[in-house]
Length: 201
Image (tube, rainbow, N blue to C red; front, side, top):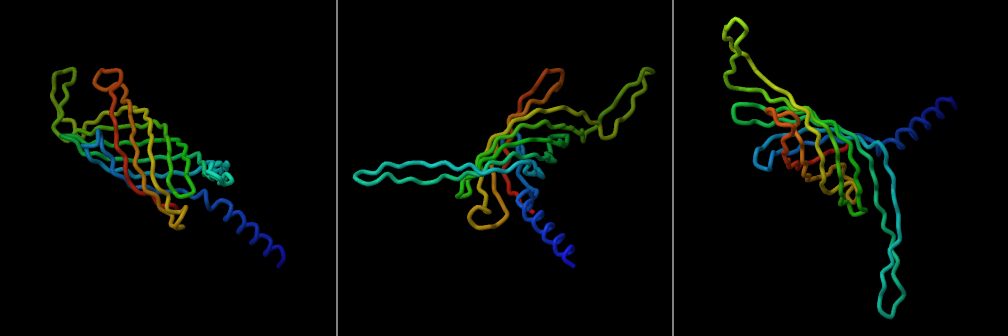
């Protein structure tokens, strides 16, 4: 019986230790140059979490200096996302792997930066034909082409768990991306707007 109780205590301790490392699922508005709307679903997981404290002294006239402690949460994050954007005569799908670093103030506001690499696939919804070596013309259903797209991201948001103990955040990010080998060009630059909400399980 004692062994069962000890095992239960250890499992409870293990769960409480890793509960803050639970993944978050996000749903966002994803727009190329902010005007070509799409949707993005993502998952992020905190790899490392730490707290940094520092004291800040504020001088006051004819009074003792006021010292306050600033406590910020630092997180190393990993994640992936899936996105879709309808374009003229084609659909764009992408899968992105990313790593980020986030600093959250005690009031809930946070700043983060990301680096990632995506695979984009453009599917043609119009008519596409090909000609073989014998000169025969045939239709190609769902013709598509894929590209590798390294990307960077910088953004800010608010974490409701800091003050309200509600496991949700809102965020806005700007992500420059570099599509490699697009139409015989070495790289094409795009700038994306990513804004949405995430829920922590």
